[in-house]
Every structure is written in C-alpha cells, then in structure tokens.
Image 1: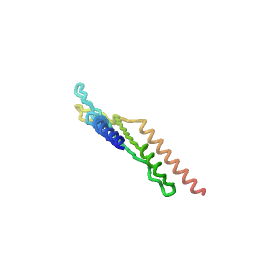
Image 2: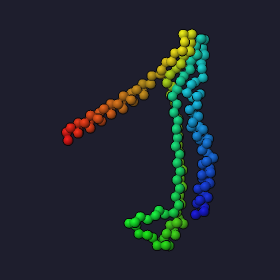
Image 3: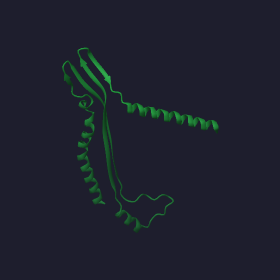
Image 4: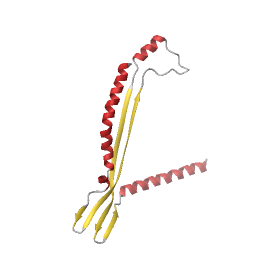
Length: 150
C-alpha cells in the first residue's frame, strides 16, 4: 500500500512540474500579438489585421485503493478473500487536453482619409449557421406535426 501511495505522489509531483509550461503554451495564443497583427506600413497607409482567438483546456485526475464496498445485495467475502483483494488493489489516472484557435475577422486600414475597419466575410461560418437554423426549424415542424397527429 505504501508503494502505491509513493507511486501516486511521484506521478503528482511530475504532473505539477509539467503543468505550467503546458498551460503557458495553450494560453499564449490569447496574447495581444495574436489578436492584432504587427502594423504593415506602405506609403501613407497602415494595415492591421484583427483576429478572433479562443483557447481552453481541461485536466483531470483519479485514484483508487482497495476494493469497492459491497452493496447490501452482494455477499461479503470471507476475511482471506478480502485481504487478497486489498493486496491486488490500487489505481491511478491522469489526463488533460487543450487547444486554441484563431481566425481573422477584420482589417483595420489607417490612411489619409482616416480609419476604416473592413470586416472579413467568412462564408463557411454563415453556411454552417444557415444549416443549423434549417435543421432546427425542420425538427420543430416535425415535432409539431407528430403532436397534432397524436
């Protein structure tokens, strides 16, 4: 039992050492350099790209020592059986994941005429929203039709 505890503690220590660099990499996408590009200057014009950036992550852990407690419907094992189960028991587990994404949403143009913000039209996003809306409408009509026939 002591060996299992020391193993879990060593895994936890390794994980706590590895976690800050991983989080730093995931959330580095949300820095201002990722949202606004470096200005590009040409003659009297300056162009800056604005982007939408999202990042996130999740982590988990788990342990388990010994057999689970028997429910009221299960028979209790004899003493020898329960001792052998305890010797063979243990457990651990860890996991995590994360990611980030970004896409340009506008171009900012600074020139002699002033500042102009030109949005970038994303046809894929509009098409997906349209498909989702039609699926929702069709589902509502189908449910309403079934309710009226019943």
